[in-house]
Length: 476
Image 1 (cartoon, helix red, strand yellow):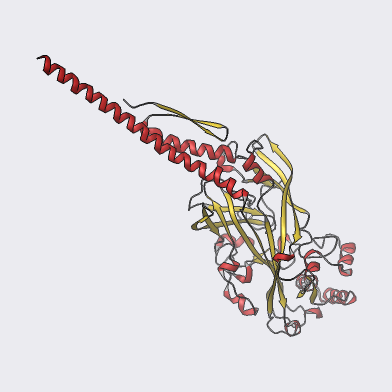
Image 2 (cartoon, rainbow, N blue to C red):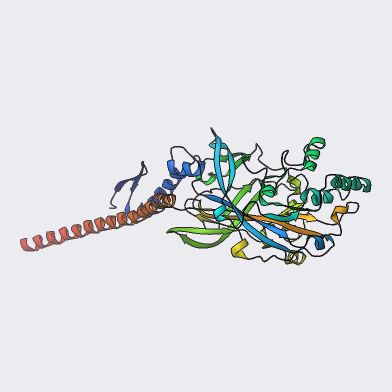
């Protein structure tokens, strides 16, 4: 007969009971291991480790910003190919903190996540006082937006630029370009054309990012179904977007981009919704790896992520498109001719490199990736790299555009990165790597013990039969 076994495994204050025969012990232990992960990963204040990691991310995050300084602005305005040099990085420590956390009866939780940035001179190549020259978005962006307006309107716009002494290029400090500078033109537009610009104060590339939140996220806690944990239920009350042309492109897929459901395989993907990109993105498996003793899967951006509708039909809803590798975000950026790409047009149509001199895309420096622990869905090392580009061209009637050739001009690219280190790595390794590993070894030990017990019982059974037979022979 099969030997019945009953063992209690005390795990993080929870008891996992196994009641199985030898031949079913292993599957039950695997179920127990899955239950351990599920119970300890649910978004619940009682799960001290995982809840703390979710609420106040203990991993230091940094944003490194690189500017494309224009070397030949006069020649560029005359119609020649622009030449740029990369300046930076200018590194900022990024602080993330969730507030207004509210749990709901349907096993979801809502929150606002605030972000703030602090300059790190010791990690930067240069200072915020460095002066760089980039295209003037207010002038060259507005010129493209007015291209289809009557000629008289374009002449009036050009006269407005001249009255406020706004030219086609800006030569300002990194700090001003990042966080805002005073502009009489901005004040004029905000007064007479409210809502035309994304911000009402100083105008800067990241002025609306600092000390702001990314919108109200509502995500699944995983309490009712661990497969749903961290997945977005709604964003700002929306379950689908309104920026794009097809239902598929307007879907809010995946998580908020910080954690994912556990038990990943090499066939899994990493979908997440990015408010800054105004759409959902999805990374794919590339390779295995190990970081400080912790096994990981690396996920990267597929070439189809920013492909145009001609090269990848599902992306047709993100058009009007240009070359592959560019995402047109004008629909969620006040109709400004702004495009997102990977840095240096990595993974983009090579023809884009013919219109700008000074770009050298490589995977190591410009590819984005997330290294994730597959059993828990927790990222170990993250590097999200994106580039901001401005579409510009000569516009009749607006003399500020000169003879500029049609070009998608890179302005800046930035990398948001963070990785586990120090005490948090040791805690994570102990609780979510070593302990489950011990459980795996224990299941085999128990299995071996069970087999040994059964074998001993069988030997005792046959040994008793042999002795009985010997007694019978002796009696005869």
